[in-house]
Image (cartoon, rainbow over all chains, first blue to last red; front, side, top):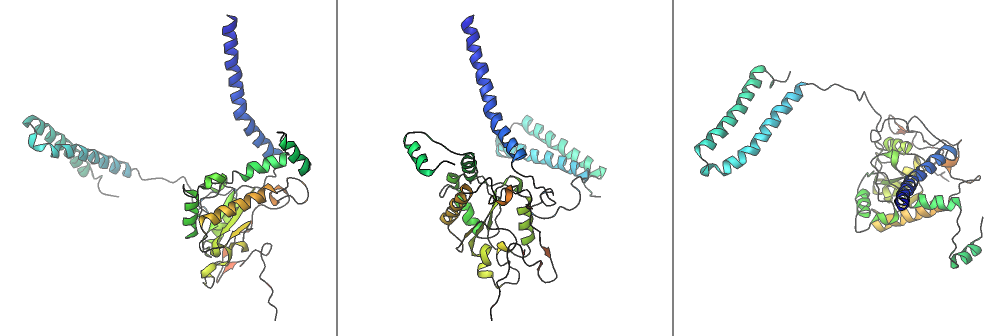
Length: 125
Length: 203
């Protein structure tokens, strides 16, 4: 029992030393900045960093939500091409069932495109 | 202050003595982080200096910071055009103290081969204080390493107290320099009179 307690004490000491090792330089840096190094804030130093240019306008601007639908449709057909490539490579060796399954998959996506087109999403307003 | 002879004698016996000033400056000199900031072809040499062959990391200066908030050193690497000069000064102002400037290459020092150009600033020291100037067009990476070593020497010799302590430890001295504006024909003012004055012409 006694030895077990001692072994855990070592761990506690190690943890304290580890925290101290990390905290001491931070505390020293803080103390140095607080008591020795004079603070020199200024108009330029507190300004927004824009690669040396002066900041213009507001960072909180609105993006058009239509772009989100464009992005989704692009992503769907982007993923589709990944499936189309192995389909094209293995085309000659495919069974009729696999071919029909692939055509159904393609038609489902095309249907989605037709829906989006008729809904007028592809026209940028 | 301990004298050099006694310090040497103690060191031979395996006792190392130092002052807070030396320790602090040693730490600062060996972690000079430059700003990622290239203006022209000198920047290519600067990049080469930071890569494996010349290995700026040996001097603790390989951490090129993409923001002036984290940088200690501005390496003005290349031609400073009059269009770019206000940006250079503003970036310098945005760096925290203490900050240092290396003017790398003939262009940053004096305008170099483009000195006669209407659009070229004839030396970046007209607007910001330059600590080390490297001649060359462009200077080789070894020259930049030498400049870093010279700067380290300068940092090691800076005093933390007393009347000749550096600018950044004097509370009353302003840390920022005025940013020039685009005038009708030239930058206004054409130079910072507190830093640089045109030489008087004797006739």
